[in-house]
Image (cartoon, rainbow over all chains, first blue to last red; front, side, top):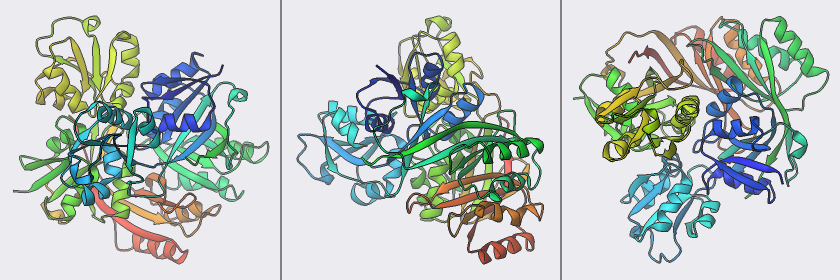
Length: 283
Length: 283
């Protein structure tokens, strides 16, 4: 059976993404992003699922930095899951919002529901937990009238009731996850792909005005569309940057090699982080 | 006395930045980034200090999204602080690393010290806390032989001893903070500025190939150097983006207005998030 590792604990968005994307494989929770990536590298698991863009459980920075500096595993797929934060209460709670004395959640989930809390629960005491899953656990074990903020899976895992759905401030927020594996043939996602992307890591030779503009020329005149660009400081000190670029098309034998050859002639270093399908999940 | 708000709790990198940058002003801790920004907007505090790039306490996304979508306050200054994670123990602990049974910290701080833990403390149980400051508090209240990962300030605030300095994996990691205020004259930072920057928010009219390249042309031919560029999805749905661009020079009366006029003629929307000095702190 295929072994899938994910950034835990239970009841988080990463676990929700894994459960939505994969059937009943053998699933293992890891405590940190580097531990999960190491486990794939060392063949202890076959597939690793880690956050690429997720304000709560991990940042693109941690995942990208580890892939860039420590372990070079290809991105095999991207999973996109909408952020839906719910107000979770004990299944026997029968009061209304004003009876809930405390709200428990990760600080970023609290921040994502700022306007709801401000408007409807201004007197509730805020308690921070290390994850949204942990917050659900706290509520499930408590005798008091308290609430957690978390997703549907957290409610299921800890037997909580969704008191109010979708209390997050922005309706169109998403989390993105990278699926990492050495052997792409074992990655079977039970959805249809929506798009294909190629992620490149581009290091500039020096920090001069217009360097990035010159790099983007190589894509622009070939009409290769970029869906994401982000500069990240190198770990060698301030003032040195690399760029992560997502191109909205699969790697091919003509356009991409030409772009790479041109950029390398300009002194850039180009690394393909992966060319992969994107799966948009509806949960 | 000037009232300064910051993203708490005690013993975090944001508090360290505030203590390093400002003298004995009246300092107030806030639980979330939106609460701190709201407090400046509603004149309850004069200055707010929130993370712009900080994998542990908050992401650029939360701060930028709130400034873009909810409250438009100018960035008055940027404070850059090196990330230095230390292994903290109770002041009376007299054993060695192998005697430490547990490590407590925020999951991102644990991830930042992954190699140290893997190599020197492979048997220690990992416990996640909501912040590095909270981890220091747990250690200070415990009778067991346990350690926290946190910064110098966390050690001071909770009376812990730094057992080993600088256990983080990457030596050149930094956190960046935005100083927000309505009146820039009250912001007095007790250091010399290292640089000046201007941050712009640019919304593209549509998602077509080469649009970003065209936008960057306006900067490139004027030899205006960009130190950061990041695309962020609009909250209106997938496929719409805005860009945050940091230009390495102060706003002026000629170059910037010309860039703005050209980009607006192309159908872009340009907003100046701030033009401000950068202070690099040595702690």
